[in-house]
Image (cartoon, rainbow over all chains, first blue to last red; front, side, top):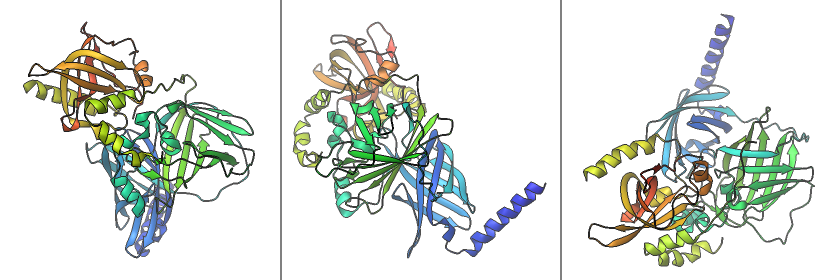
Amino acid sequence: MEKITFSTLLTFLNLSFLATSNCFAQLEGDWMLTINHEVERLGVISFEQTDEGMKAFVDGGQVDLKLEADQIEMIVDYRNGGGRRLSRHFTGTISKDSINGTLVANHDNSTGTWVATKINQNRNLQARPVDISGIWSRISAGMEKVDLDYTALAQTLVDDYSYLDDPGMRCISPGLVRLSGWPYPMEIIGNEDQITILYESFREVRRIYMDGRNMPENLPASAMGYSKGHWEDSTLVIETSLLKPNFVDQAGQPISNQARVIERITMSEDGKNLRSLLTLHDPQNYERPVTRFRQWRKSPEATMMEYDCDSYPFYRGLQLEGRLIEFLDRVGQRQSQ
Amino acid sequence: MNKLVQYLGVFGLLFFTSKTIAHHSFAAEFSYENFGEREGEVMEVHFVNPHARIFFSVTNEDGNKEIWSAQTFPPQNLLRRGWNKDTIKAGDQIKINGNLGLENSRRLWIVTITLEDGSVIQPRGGAAN
């Protein structure tokens, strides 16, 4: 009984708090978003007070937002694995430290739940490394937000994108950001000075230097870039640059050669799950950083397979459809890859 | 036409109740709503990434041969479903049904393949979302 009274009191206090703060000031900042819609997916919601009122961004892209008293509504676009553009309609109730609610996918009325909690910015910088070695299978690639906060340049590139420009069709690596969400396993091999990640997809290899070195200045850019890492508490923090131009995902959101990527990788306490919050800083293309949450589960039983890739069927298909010239003429869109 | 409607119903249901969705570029190349079936002789089989492909020769309503391209998941998924590179070979007679390509292109995204001996392969499965 005491518990109920206390919780009722808390709810009352929260509501009073909301009612008296006319601009939802407590919303401002970054929230960790967890949705359960077929699988668990993670994201970041950022609320920002502007002259035009409160705005919300999910993973770096604006969403439709409606606030009334302690009720919130959002429409968040995403793409499915096949590249189809879809959206989820979120409704929820705001309390002081969390937002809870349900969601409906607009294309098939499938439902799910969601919760958001304020991201704690306090970081323990003392290194407390954990052993993340082993084979990991992907659970989800995050919210897969399509529309991002593009610069004028990026908007032009997105509008002009065709799936014919997708490097993966020609067996060329889709690069760090996109590959990190690819649906095949990765194997992590670690020691004190270097963590190596072997990706089944595109046979990619990443070396993450843990020895405190500086970024080299004259190394050519590559699909996975040059990475150095350190531990903050038991979070592996990786900084990557020297990336070749590529795309965030199959909707063709561009990544320039000036991009810098920060990944914060944490393992669950039972050692069974791994998650990475990837943040893409690329001011040439995006007005705000783009985020992507990836999740994996430990799969010691899995076997890493060869990524046997051949671009011939892609070209042969285009030739049969009379589209080979169209493809060849798009060389300008591909030459930066 | 009746047959088409039938497939729309049956395979539409199969498709949308599946939790696994197609691989990249699906939406740019294939219809989510329109399904079809084509029968013919296998010309080329490519058991590779990024998508496994079968090119096969189909005799159309006018009696002319046309080449169709059928795509599906890459080998990592197919091997985990018991389909290996020798399951379908050039010269085999097959019947493929699946999502039709956009803009009347001669493409199918494979839902099922019926082999000469009547056995049916369903490539869907695995974590290709």
